[in-house]
Picture (cartoon, rainbow, N blue to C red):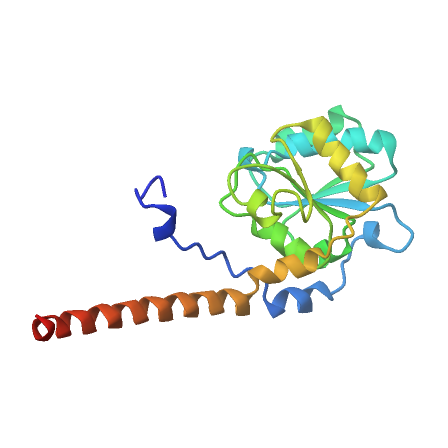
Length: 228
């Protein structure tokens, strides 16, 4: 609205159609990683490009605090130019046994469905599709309150923990809280607000309303000389 110079009343926001049937079918596929075998410690999952934007160093440092309190593991899926720095940080913190950077995953949903907690540690995001995807699969989420999507998705913390950007202590506390007592709120129900069917319905509703207004305006123009 600030960019376009329009009032709030002139703007209609329709979110991304994130949740599709494909998510649920792919989530059922097996994960070939020993950490997800029965009886293993809970896995904290992060995912995204290994870039400054995603701020995985904060997540790794927060996990070091988590690991000092709880038996758990951290896995970050993705590739990018920050990999050497992240690997060095893992060694510096002595997390080699409990931290994995396996690279790009062709089926992220299978990992999400099996994770104990999904964490978004970004400095900024356009929306944050991965949060919605994790929620759709019933996985508790912890996210930084970064510009601009997570707070809207989580409705200011109603559906998952929101913590300040770059706050290692708050992020670790959020993860520990979800490991100890996973949110009882129905995160999957909230995720359905971003389903393909619901978003398509919003587009149709908007287009029909615009069409009706246009028809009313056209009739008013056509009738104007007569009423005059």
